[in-house]
Amino acid sequence: MTPEPSAVLIANALAKTFADQSGGLDIFTDISLRAEAGESIAIIGPSGAGKSTLLSILAGLDEPSKGSVELLGQPLAGLDEHSRAEMRANHISFVFQSFQLLPELTALDNVQLALEIQGHPNPEQQAADWLDRVGLQARHQHTPARLSGGEQQRVAIARAFATQPSLLFADEPTGNLDEQTGTEIIEQLFQLNQQLNTTLILITHDTSLAQRCQRRLYLHNGRLQEQ
Image (cartoon, rainbow, N blue to C red):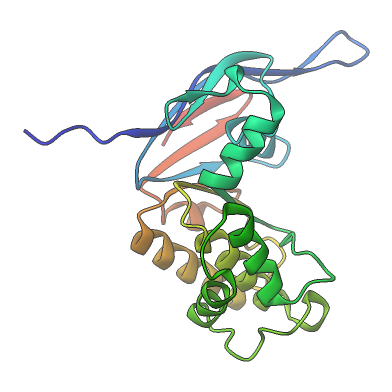
């Protein structure tokens, strides 16, 4: 008998409420989600539905008003902020719409820094190898200001995968790119994700992009439904 795959992420009965003048605004209520090792999941929905807020909670960047999140079997509620940050550094990577590169560092240094934080051996060579892998052989010493949007996102992808995370969160990764560049970036993202067998949770409003994932979940009116 084949053993069941292990869950990388389990969210149970999540709710998030923000205080306002009326007493409270419910962003979402009673959201549960399980992501297995190597699985790709798209969370789609209209702008303002709470997709990025949900990502922040799943990644331990924010706390739910109710409910619980487990990452790699560890309940986040039992961790202080330092321990959460350490878990993210060791097991989670992010690819954002806005690239989130350090502007004063070169492409090489941006990737190398992520490796150094984890204590990887020979981080400079590993960073160079990953930049080559995403087609930036001639851009190692370029700062973000000297790179196109697509090149900046390739650096972000190299940085994300270089640490070989268990879980990758991608939040509208093509939102600041033209259609052709966005298509190229997505091809690279999914190719590397399959090669490393990373669990991918993709936040997007693009239904065609969501179709690339194994599962599609729709967030609307505070509820998460399987499509």
